[in-house]
Length: 361
Image (cartoon, rainbow, N blue to C red):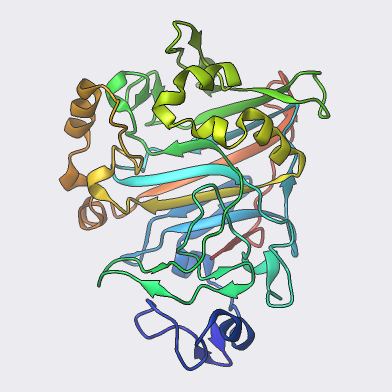
């Protein structure tokens, strides 16, 4: 963020320069976004249909989040109903305490252009998700000026939050849930090797105009289709996909959050508006809550699983200093992003990810 050639951030990058940023409106008026050096500074590279995100660049933490562009001024809007979406992920270089994700959010295609936001999608503005992030420096075209945080920790610009629907297709690392035998090194999904994640968005009418009723997912590795794990529901039934029938019996585990936010019908409405593809890589903010990734363990989780994961990923191995020392080349690679008709093998044509087709905040 620049005012002419001067930075709008304080020297430690933890707060705003009070000269130009006494409040959000003044800061948005006085400051502008500059470009970034993707490879040299942020460790982001592309090759053909692949995107690679590195966690450390020249010994410095460079956690990143990138968005797929349709052109120089717009994010690509995906319409997923009655479609199949697939991608390859290489999680072999993702250790404990590191989290990578590929997901969709209801970002505006133009990046939220407004009277106070002239940058737009070209500069990676307009991010939002279902966690209502407060650490964004600009939200809705205004600077998020009020910051707080302990020395040495990521500051939280807490005066605002950026909320919108979010749909996660894959989040984790190479170790997540390795104790259950399904996912991890040498498991059913062997994270030592690249695998494909396939998601299908089924509607009541079998058309893109129909109501979303089910989200299915399966995996492909070494040419073998691997079905999603079947789970036992509270009412005695089994399920392996996301439906209202799956989520309702499990409401006690989620505090009825799914129903309170509109259930699968609300997600269908979000899909109708088009969603933007996001790919990211970061470390756990709370190492003590990091179970192979940054996801917290529900209090209702089986103690045996908690012990297994603690043995696989002890707290000492999930701190940033440990990760940087023992896994300096931590990275994730996403490739062969495709969308097409349901049931078509590896549907669609891969989206080419050129060096100018991603932006970072």
